[in-house]
Length: 359
Image (tube, rainbow, N blue to C red; front, side, top):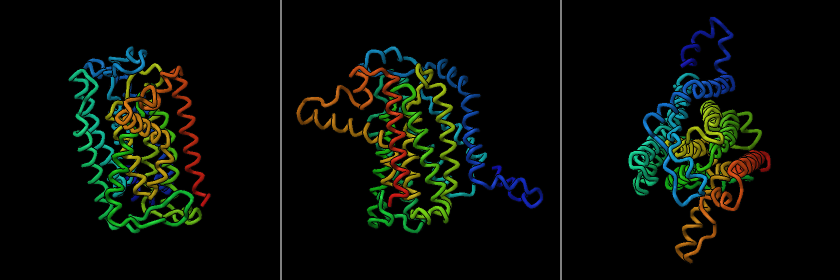
């Protein structure tokens, strides 16, 4: 909104030119989401508490988690609210990529909201049936991927692999199911990673900072040419979204740090997970997002391995899945698990960024 309002005035007052810079708008988008979370966070938490929207804890989990029962959940609503407000103020509302990203972000959030609402009203941790949640995720993912596929963007179906400068293969129409599975898989992987105070928020800060760097350089002809990565016209506007998400995650972490005053809920984890995959599709980092979110891959892999191994051998490999609960039950304190997973997330981010030059 600021961009549309200020742009015609630049010729009359040149300092307004600063609003044209992505770095300026991105920085203030992050500051806006942070302030929105700080200003409205306590009020939203209190409202959730009054409405008795409390977390339903799994009975088969670590015993200390039972004490968290009743803690307000669905805190992801003020992440979504703050990002939407920030993007309306600082984003380029004429950018198609901004609307694709915001649309998928809100749509996945809606699925998570329904799931959280059912958990709270039914007083159990089941929520939406698995088929219902997956159906919603596949519907949103299919809509987004088909829109991108038929948008006519050059090279949209090319697949790039880290450490290789040129695309390895053109997937053609097969890019559609590939993209759908990536979006749904990433959304669920992030969702599985939300189980300890501050864990997911901290990891998402690292992921969105990395994506902010990637979207910025992908949207510049000079930087992308120098690094040998595909130039994506207009991708730079997603830098504003990524930095807004960083600010929102930091603002949420303020309330979610141990001991948590509020939990993110599926409304936050599904929306943030889904949108990271959508951004990776747009900037042609479909494989690299698996490195950036390496902790998320480990978390969902532990769940898949646990389920398959139990069905085949009637035994468990991990004491509990997802992986963070395994380490808790192995004797690690919750805060130690969180900080060590943050460190691991930082290492994955560094590895991902290093691939830009090693190719």
